[in-house]
Image 1 (tube, helix red, strand yellow):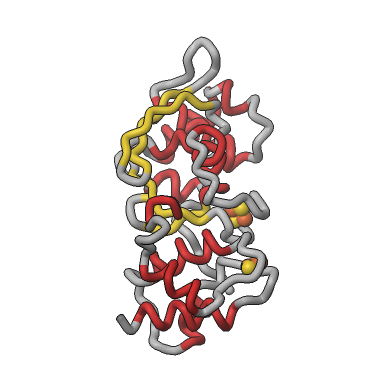
Image 2 (cartoon, rainbow, N blue to C red; image 1 turned 180 degrees about the vertical axis):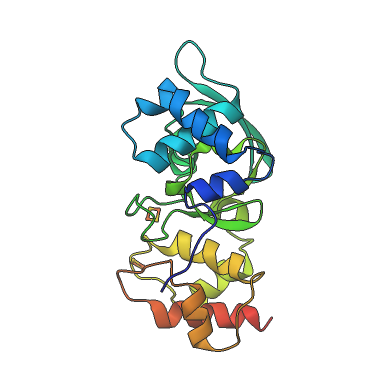
Length: 216
Ligand code: FES
Ligand code: FES
């Protein structure tokens, strides 16, 4: 149960972000000189990420907001957000895409999973300002009523949910899993889905749904 997701906000992830070229020295300088970041009340890594985000996004305006351009579910979006805004809150509160759920808000449950440039990400751990130019897909972008994504259909057919709170994240992870290396066994799927917690314990049905789609 140790799935590592690319959206986890770490200094290493920030330094590896496509389109951002920053040396270790510059990165540390940004952390040191960016007053906005140091005032955020975030832990060091969070401040570092915020500093990098500010630098990447071109700084804050007079209201302390940063402008970011994203493509969300195929549609270009331009947002002005507080630099502390997570991708999760940007999606839910600024774009009203509430299909993505906030569970723990600490990277522990996977309810907030979305795709960024095709890879699954815990959106609660990723600052929106770090996604300038990125392509984001949420559950709303997968399928629609009457035209469901095969994974959504499989979750329905296998009762892969009970309360449904984790389901959006489960489905987004499951769809991303289709493009990842994963062995054929149920145990392999469980390991690959280990970052998505289901308090209702619908795991066996979730695995059945995923295995059905993998056979298509
Ligand atoms: Fe993001 Fe739990 S809400 S991992
Ligand atoms: Fe309730 Fe998963 S269906 S938490």
